[in-house]
Length: 84
Image 1: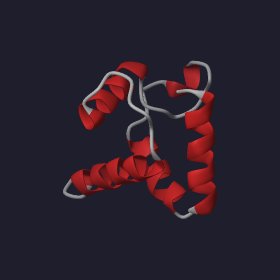
Image 2: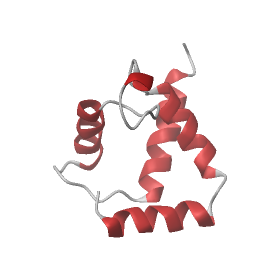
Image 3: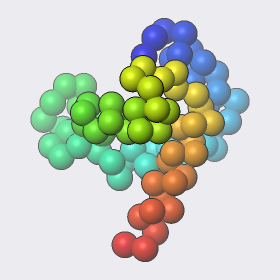
């Protein structure tokens, strides 16, 4: 992720803070096992899984992350877990 992409995401979520809850819940559900043992000590998805999801969601190897796309993916993940 480039600095420009990160800035755009920060602006997006600063304007829509309520959507961070949806994304936070999805990230928690997708966290890698043993996340507390590895730097940066954050409950994030594993790198290989994250890269796979970006390619399958966007259809290209290095997609630009957009806030709307992230929220849509988080909402989809939440709906998928609803029946479990």
